Every structure is written in C-alpha cells, then in structure tokens.
Amino acid sequence: MKKINIYISTILMSGLLLLHTGCNDFLDRDPLDGFTDDTYWTSEANVKTYGWLFYDQFKAYGIATGTTAEFYFQASNMTSSINISDDLTNNTFLPYQINPGSANSDWKDQYEYIRRANVMLERIPEVPMETEAAAHWEGVARFFRALSYYKLVQRFGDVPYYDKVIEDPNDVQNIYIPRMDRNEVMQKVWEDITKAIELLRESDEANSVTKYVALALKARIGVYEGTYRKYHQSADGSTFLQGAKEADAALMTSGKYAIQMNRDAFKAVYNSEDLGGNSEIILYKNYSLGILSNSIQAYTNTSTVGNGMTKAAFESYVCADGLPISQSPLYEGDNKLEHALANRDPRLLATVDSEGVSFRGSVNSLSRARKSSTGYVIHLFYNENSSNVTTTGQNTIDAPIFSYAEVLLNYAEACAELGTITQNDLDMSVNILRNRVGITPLTYVSDEVVMVDGVTINDPKRTSALEQISGVVPSIIWEIRRERRAELMTWTAIRYYDLMRWKKGDYLDHTKNPDVALGVKGSALAPDDVATLNEEGYVYAYPESHRTFDPEKNYLNAIPTGQIDLYVSEGVSFPQNPGW
Image (cartoon, rainbow, N blue to C red; front, side, top):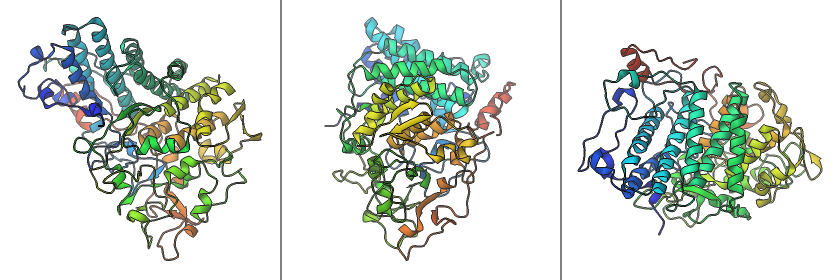
C-alpha cells in the first residue's frame, strides 16, 4: 500500500496552530478543540504530528479538482504570476495582472507557515525528548521557515521578517514592522537552511524532511539567489552559488540517489503511481485514492482544451546528435508533426504526444478526445496502467518535490556561474542526463566553445534580439539552461522563477518573443481544421490578445493592498512594489 505520510494533517491540531494570515488577523486563533497549547507539547510524537502540517506547502499536482499546483496548470488567478509560462500556453488568454489586489493567497499562506515554524521553535525546548530528537525537529522547523521566506522573496522582494511568536495583539511595534531588504531576508534564509542541515537526521520516517532533503533545498535556494544577485546586479551572489555547489556535491557523493539509465525512467518521474523507492526521488508528494488525489491526468486526457506546448519550448529541444535544430542535419523540419519529432531528444517525445496534433479548431481530436491550445498535446503525465485517467479528482500519480535530476542541473549551473566548470563537472551532471536518453554528451572547451562530437554548438537563438534585451550569456550557460528546460519541462513553479532570476522576463512577452504565443505549423493540421495563422504559417493561440511583460513592474508581484491599508491605519508606512 502506498504511504500517505506526506500529507497527513489532523483536525485535532486546529486549535494549536496559532497562525496569522497577515497583519489583519495576525493573532486570530481557532477555537481550542480538546487540547491547549500548554497540554499539547508533551512528547516527540505530538511534535511529529504538528510537523506534518508543513507538508501541505508542497502543492505538487494539486488536490482533487483544483489547479493550484506546481506543474502544468495555468489557472486564471492573476495574483500569482507563477501561472504564466513560456513552456505552455494556457487554454484561455493569460495576461499579467494590471492592478494590485486587496489580498494574495501566496502572502497569506506563507506567513501562516512561518508562524507555525516559530511556534514549533519556541515550544520544542519545553518538550521532554532526547537532545537528538529536539535538534531534528528544530531542523524541520528551520527548513520550512527557510522555504516560506524564500517563496515570499521570490514573489514580493522585500518582506517583513518575523522570527518569534507575537502573542499580544496590541504589540503594534512588533506586529507592524517594516519590510526587510530582500538581501537581508535571504541571508536569514541561508542561515536557517544551513542550520537545518546541521540538525536534521540523515534518515527518519519514509518520505519526510531529512538532511538530504535540506541539502536539495539549499542547492535550489543557492542557485536562485546567486544568479538573481548576478543578473539583477543587486549584490555579490558567489557565496550562494558556492554553497549550492557544495550542497549538490554532498548529495552526489552520498550514494543515496542515482539517475536510472533508461529512456523510460525520465517519464516515470512524472507519471508513476508510486515514486517510493525511485532512486531519482529525494522527496515526493504521495497521492492515494480516497485520501488525497489530483486531476493532472484528467485535465490532459479529456475533451477540455488543454495547455499546449509553445513553439518556443518545442524548438528548444536538441536533435538526437545533441545539436540544436538550426545546426543538426537530422532535423526534418516542422511541416508535419512526424517530421518535427523525428530524431529529436527523447524527452520531447515523452512530453508531447506523437499521435498527432489537435487544436481547439480541429475537426478530429486525438484519442481520449484530447485537444490543446497550440496543437502540441502534453503527454507527460499519461500512464496507461493508471485507473480513472479521465476522471477529475481521481488521479493518483505521485509528484516529485525534489529530484536528483534537479540536483545535477543545479550543480552544473553553479559551476558555470562561478566560472569553475570543467569537463569532469559536465560528465558528472548534465552528461549523465543526456546519456540516459541517448543524446550525445557536451564537450567543454571554454565558456564560449561547447561541442558535441567535434562540432561546435552555434545556436543563433543565443545571440538573438530577444537575448540582447537583458544580455547574452556564454554558450556553456546557454546549454545548461537548455538541459534544465528539457529535463524539468512543465514544472512551472521552477521554470517561472528561473526566468525571473535570469532576468529573462521578456521570454513571456508576446511582442518580444512571438514564439511563446505560437503553436504548430498550419501544414501539420488537417485540411478542414480552423485556425488563425501568423504570417509564417504557425497557429496563433490568441490572435486577438497579446501579453506584455513590464520589466519595471513584473519581476515582482504586487503587495496586497489590504496589508498596506492595515499598516497605514496604524500610522506605519508600507510601500508598494515598483510599478504597481
């Protein structure tokens, strides 16, 4: 039977959370339900139960029929710009939010988790348990506090920082504190995750936070913050990049994880009914029918027009010889789908259905009545052995939270950004992923000269007008980013903030990057299909609508106006983010 521990929660604890949802109800408490704060913190078992509440923070494939998730879904909730992607085109037009909203679920939820962590940190010393156990659970609380502040900074930049529980609702001085500079918040995040690694057990209950999970989070945070500081020129990010490299190296030499060297293993990370025991998975979200389920298979396997892969993403995959389509003699063009998929990276074949193209205006859809916004139908989550594939709210494939593939990609990127990358670094990271799917490995000559099988990669897209906007990157970084995109395709929670940290928000702009709004070539459609094509003959997903990205505004979400109003009512200034 599949384990269900990743999402355990308990009504029993509802009276003990002492959560806040922003300053407006910072100290509101739910009714006590049989236990009090004084009587609950009496055993390690109770601390463990409390700790499971944090795992709801991992949205993964969503819950039931919901689309609040970290993969594939692009809902219409404009308060969370994570829903916008250059890999996928939503089935309805998805612009950026124009005006700030009064509330934001990201803001509210993360501060709830932060307060939970602070409560846990303050109560642990009172609990009768072994010193080792107390250290571990302190590590768990620090892990999740680091994760929440990291997410807040990604979305909002400068944010208020609380590291203690405030019990007095009249303590205005400590409740209505100003926003802390993002660089200072991230330094505290770094301290928390570093301390968590020191405190956490190497092994605990299956599929739970351990030292190795914390190393994976530290690497993710380090690569994000190191490159954000570099490309946004906000500060020196080398300490974060070096820390990411070291955390990845610790995972890579631990012997705990390994890439499964067969082509089917890539897709198994995203469509498996049970990720337990998969050597590539560091932490995952476990789904089980009747307890916790999702709808990701149903939404990609029914008559609802699904989110389709963009032309930009489709063309980013290399051919089987490891060269980009502009260079490879193996590329057969895109007049027909079978031509476009021939001799391509097997990760593309695992992600896009080769059965055919199916657009909203198609006369005939694919099997299971599937259609997509761009004609390219996402096939990554399909498992023919799954039950209830086409039933919403009844899907039970597990979702990765931290994967070993991401660790290898983070390692390669950190090395390249630090300017220390070697052939050995490539061979122990991205070349393992390429070898797994039969793609010719990369050969490093210099940052500007990267080869495959003796041929220098010279992708014209790397130096295109689009790249000139925020700056052209060296060839080695370009190729590592390409690998990252192929390996983590449709993992929208990662891709969106990759673009934000690289200062590549222009990729999301239809006017600057037209390919992000395009799909298949019209010649690949059936003769009677109805579609609007651009002048080059590609399907326009939204012929009447064009999304723009404002670099002075859209790298951050708006601060909820309700929060600003609350501060102002207490006579405290709380500035909005630039451009909003």
